[in-house]
Image 1 (cartoon, rainbow, N blue to C red):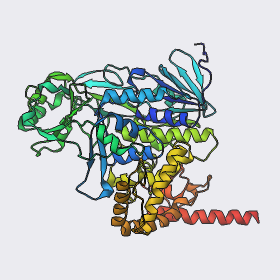
Image 2 (image 1 turned 45 degrees about the horizontal axis):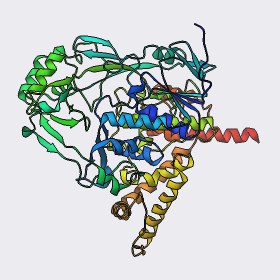
Image 3 (image 1 turned 45 degrees about the vertical axis):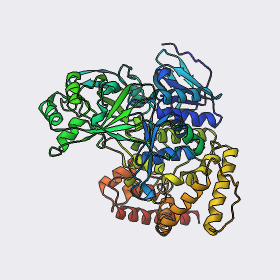
Image 4 (image 1 turned 90 degrees about the horizontal axis):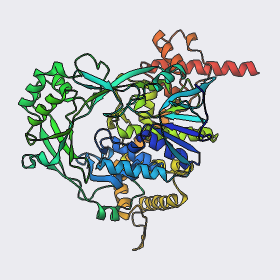
Amino acid sequence: MKLNNINGNYRVIVVGAGHAGCEAAMACAEMRLQTLLVTLNVDFIAKMSCNPAIGGIAKGQLVREIDAMGGVMGIITDLAGLQFKMLNRSRGPAVWSPRAQCDKVLYSLLMSKLLQTKKMLNILQSEVKRILVKNNITYGIQLITGEVIHSEVVIVTTGTFLNGIIYLGESYFNGGRFNEKSSTLLSRSLLDDCGLHLDRFKTTTPPRVNSYSINYSKLNSQLGDTDPTPFSHHTNVLSWRKNLKQLPCWLTYTNEKTHKLIKDNIHLSSINIGKVSSKSPRYCPAIEEKIERYPDKESHRIFIEPEGYTSNEMYLNGLYTGFPFYLQKQIVNSIVGLEQASIIRYGYAIEYDYVNPIQLDSTLEARTTKGLFLGGQINGTTGYEEAAAQGFMAGVNAGLSILGKDKIILSRSKAYIGVLIDDITHKGMNEPYRMFTSRAEFRLSIRSDNADLRLMDIGHSINLISDKMYKKFQKYKTTLKQLYINDKFYIKKNYVVRPWSLNKVQEELNIYKKYEGYIKIQENTIKKLQKNEQKKIPEYFNYNEINSLSSESKQILNKIKPKTLGEASRLKSITASDVAIINIYIEKFQREKIIKKQ
C-alpha cells in the first residue's frame, strides 16, 4: 500500500482518547509541543465505560496528585460531579479518600471541549494500524487507510480496545466496548514492530436500569457530604458548594433467591464457560465470581447510582456479570427494590490484550523501543484514576524527553502515583492492578489533603501550573509555615488565600500536628532508604558473574536491568540478601574501575 504523509509532522502522537489519552495529550499540548490525539470515535472522548464515578479509596489520592501537577481529571470532575463524599471519615486523615459520582455525558462533553480549546492539540478520528519503528526508535504511526503521520514520540493509551472480545454467556463478538469496534491490527504491531509481549485480561460490567422502574421506598438512601470537598486545587470551594446540586445514591442487597439463580445457572456465564480464561480484577469481580468465592455469604451490597442529571439510567454497582440477557433480567428482579426494574443496558464481559508493564521503564517508556510510551489499561491496570495517572506521567515524560530535560520519576515516598508506577513496572502482574492505601507504605505522609504541598512545585517546574496559580500556592504555603512556627501569628481579617481558605490552612495544620511524631519517624526511614534508592547500578553490570545469586534472581535482574539498588530491591522474588550481595559487587566493580584509571 502506498504511504502518504498527512497533516504535516507532530512532535507527539497519542493513540486513544480515554482518561489516560486525554491527560497525556493535554500535558504535551500545555508543554507547547504540537500534539495529535487519534481516537476511533471523537464522540466518545473520556467516555465513562463502566461506573461514572471518579475517586474512591486510594484512587481519590491519585486524582488529587494529578491535579496538583497540572492534570485535568480533578477539574472536570468538580464540574461534572453530581455527588461528592469523603470516604473513610471514621478513620484517620491518612486514608481519607474523596469520591464523586459524575454525570457521564457531561464529563465526556467537558473534557472534549477542553481538549478542543488547545492550540497545540489536534484531534483525528481514525484507527492506528502500526507503530512505525526503525532501529528500535519510533518515528510515527500508520493509519488503517495507509497514511503515515510522523512524530518524535508515540504514546499508546488504548484501554480495552486491543483485540477486544465481548461475551454474553456463550455468545461473543469483537468490540472494545459494547457497540464499538475493537482495534485488531495495533496489537500485531506492538508485538512485531515494537518487540513487546502481550497477554490477556478480562473484566465485566453491570446492567443499567430505568430509574422510574425502581421502588425507592424499599431502599436505603446514600447522600453526599453536607460540606463536600472538591478534587481540584483550582476550584473555589465556597462558590462551588453554593452551585452544586447533589443527587442521592441508593443501597440494596442480593439475597437467597438471587444466589440460587446464580448458582443454578453458573455454567451459562461467560466467566465459567471456558471462553474467557484470562484473569479478572480480584477486587471488582463479577457477581457470579463473588458467589463462587464466598459460598457461605448470604448477601452482597448493590449500590444503585445515577448516571447523570438528565439521564434515567441507574448503574448497579456490584452486579457485574457475564450472564446472558434473560438471566440478567431474572437476577436483577430478584433483588429488593428492583422487582419491577426495567433494564436499559445489559452487562457484559470483555477480554482484551494488555502489555505487561514490567517491559516499561519507570518513565513508562518501552524498554524495547525508544520514544514509545504506554499508559492506562493497556498496562494491565483497572480504573479511570490509575489510567489517568499513567497517562499524565507518560505525557509529561514523553514531553520532557523531546525537550531534552530530565524525566520525572516519583518515588514511593512522594506520591501514590509513584507507588502505582513502581509496582507495575517492577513487580509485573498476573491480575489487573488496582490502587489501595495499603500498597503505600508511607501513606501517613502522602495523604489526599497535602497533594499540593508534595507535588505542585513539580507541576510548576514543567510549566503545567501557571505562575499566577503558583504565586497563590506559595502564599498558602507561607501561611502554613508561619502558623506552624507561631500559632499566634497574626492574620488580617480580610486575608485571602484563595482558592485555598483559612479553614483549609487550619485543617492542614491540625492533621500535620496529629501525625507529626509518626511523620518524623517516616521521614527518617525515607532518608535511610534513599541511600539504597539512589545508589546506581552500573549500566553494564554482569549479574551472571555473581555466583551467590540464584538462577531466578539473575534471570529477573538481567531482564529488568534495574538502574538503582532501590529498584532492584522491589523486584519480584529479589530478596534483601540479594540486594546486599549486589551492593558488595557494585563497590568491588567501582574499586576496580578506579584502579584501572590509575
